[in-house]
Length: 397
Image (cartoon, rainbow, N blue to C red):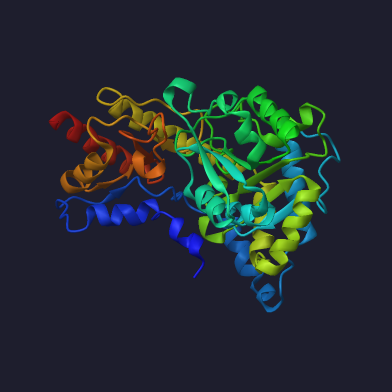
């Protein structure tokens, strides 16, 4: 077996299963705020498009994806992030993928040169795929703590030059998981300058970019920052987007990677061998999804209502703030986060994720300790019920 597999830590939900093993919850309805799986209805037009194009299952799909899908993605990127007209070439700058999870992992395998003592820099806490991707690519993960003191955005200026010199890939997540923090235009452009100086690639995970609260102020993206500083070739910049959160279609496993044409050309070659290609019916449905914004606005309305209701309940008893974007809350716990997670299940039949399962301890801090992640993905009433039970549990403490 690949010896590097031994470096992988159990996935957070595997650890939670072990944590709760043998615990008998009370006779209350189970409410889960643990897994970040959207529960809002998938738009009917997606269902219809898939069912009407099942004949496409009779043909092998192109790894590169069909041009109508890539063109729709290109139009969406240009419109959503105010990119210069014609700066995105669907034939060179866009690659459809089977969800961003597999793409974020595969990307490191394609771009890391393991002969050069590579480092992969990432936020802490983080989506565990970043760490696993780095380890299996033969690189050292470098964790940058995201805390309330730095607005949950890593302090990139504190990273030693020796680390940047080894860095081949930087993962960022904006809006962040689990903090919901959004990087500013200035912060993104500072990173692009660092990438130019030290010659590394920025992989920006932007799969929560369409879940925000103010319709007049959508989160900025890496390609947008790149274009505004004149880098319209998007050199060293690659973004990852998905329909899972935006369109409530996690089971369709539909996303895309876009940016630096030279990087994507090599990534396409890797993926041709990897054997990942989106099924034709999903390509048709995805094309329609990227062309429609009405269902996305309706989706944001549902999340706004849930955040308002849940924060009204929890704010008096927990230190918790509304995030910049996304669908997570990241409150401070009244006791050890692992114990509190177990207590919520044992006493209230509520599932959450301990913050310490989403981060790694560093020399200076453990940024996930004594926090929990709450995913407001269930129905509004279920989220309210969970919040009321969490509040009751805190008040009992």
